Amino acid sequence: MRKIAFIFTVLLAVSFSQKTQAQTIVDAAVSNENFTTLVAALKAADLVGALQGDGPFTVFAPTNDAFAKIDEATLKSLLKPENVKALTNILTFHVVSGKLAAADVVAALKKGNGKVELKALNGQTLTVLQKDGKIWLQDQNGN
Image (cartoon, rainbow, N blue to C red; front, side):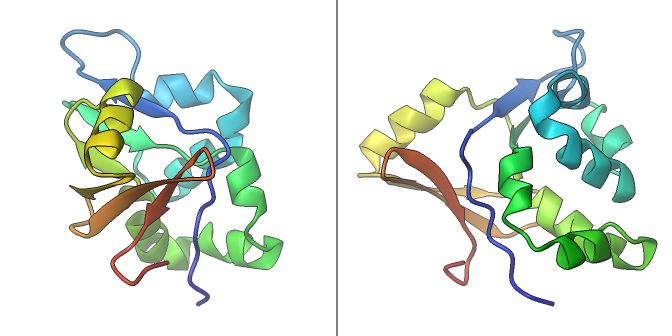
């Protein structure tokens, strides 16, 4: 399967805790038309319940425009039941434990000279980069 890099035109760092906020990450994504593909992917990977559970979590959520950069055949393949493991790995790469506001990410990037490393829920190191005024996520292989 081709390696997939999500290019973010919009960074959504949504954090929540069920005990302190009524809206979950899933609720926020469902209520925003820019995240319909993400919602479909979360449902296909059976991650809706996990992201509605106890947090806090921060999601670097790919927009529909980011998903559109993946060729249609690859995206359709990822959404099939037999590819749940691969899809779950991709989606949980975009989630970190804890509450990070966008201002926290920007401050960490300034402190780290445009780069900061975080541990994703899938266990991989997620490098957050600031380049050309945009936020990028990079995996351990530089993708």
